Image (cartoon, rainbow, N blue to C red; front, side):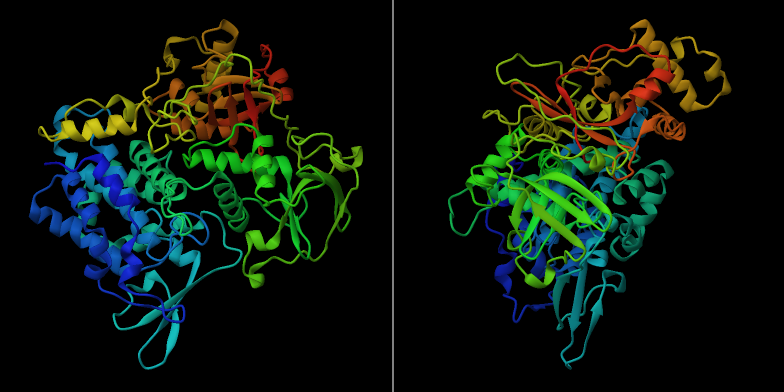
Length: 625
């Protein structure tokens, strides 16, 4: 009998017994064999075997061999310092969970996309193997670039170790610290270097036998999920589910019966991750935060916007839609130092000849960095809190600044404060192909749906079809339970080739052709704008194009090339961090969603000769990309 989803969840929610095999002595762990490391996860591995659906010899030769090598390599290393799966054995467990989620999603999808039934049948097992291996490898670069691992031998000698050197020898000990100043997401580049160490040679040969799949697989393990197509979408979604379950469903030592971590704890964990990973830069001109001897002062709207994006992208449940609600939660639990009865301080920040007045949240350094040695130095930064209280708790990071200070901001458009009436009907929302959008719906799944990465149409189109034998029906039921509500009405996909192209498009450049198609579609009303399924919205700062959906509407086969050529035109506004992609939040009375977008400023819109309707009040541009 197949294992039910409920049984698997009980395994996930059970205490992690990986650390019960040994306790660290003076911060050191014994190097163990693969059998001992995998023993606490036997139930999950049995489920993986059933989802793979291959003969025993095939399983042992390709799958179990990889699991053994993976466990021997990662040992009891954590997956992060202060975020998801941060305890001993976290990296191993996270890899297994992502592999499970990926195989569960894969069983409802016909791959490769747009192939004949004969080709899909012949490559079925190969694509399943690509999902499995990509899931295990996706975070494998973390011990290389994020962690400092010291190996101690029985003879008393010790030296630095990296996974590139191969597994640690049994009989040795190791301890782990995290590098300071590490670069966010740098670990994603390392996975191809470690693949030959982990994958059996015949497994690598098998993946290489399908060049198109190999290209997508390499993109996926390096974090380029949009370039990886359906394979990248599966692994990205599987990863976020594992992260969300670990952060939102963890059991705290103080409250053994608690299933969901308090919101304040998750908010603090998210802030700590954003700050220590460098996503919220500190102590420089235009930074998101500044430190003095005892406190960190976070630019209020920028930090809260980034925190909400981060939590929603992880799929965490019960996330507030208003910044003021987040600040209230932080204040009520003593995480921020209040300014009288308010959470916000008005501060004058000076670095050399740079000066700006900002609305900030004040948090003790010990909340972010419990270890005093890890705290950053605020040398060169002067912070003068003002005795004047800010007007509101939802001030943007520009409010309170003088005209001179405004000129020192990075060259990016001003950002509005949230303005979502609580008693109004929902405003038109953008497409939510991967989510119901009901974050607070008590009837939703335990695994929250993802709101940030639009998935290819294939991910939703394939569900409900048999992929192999009668056992697939149960897998599909599990997928539908997880995916409940995600098959929203597909956005319109007008064909780019059925419309006239102007003289500019005659050059053959895909970016200019796309621009001509966009201009014609807006002029004729053929392309929807500011509607629930629209890929185009007007906001206060200009025009936003939902990516990658708008490019897939134009050319489903070559959308990635079109997107790159569009970027070459340099019509879009780049973010504060010099990135191409912005994040927008669409909010209504009962739902919210995130969109990845390109922003075309009002000046560029005028030069393009476009006449646009009023702004969509439901869509707000966030600070972080």
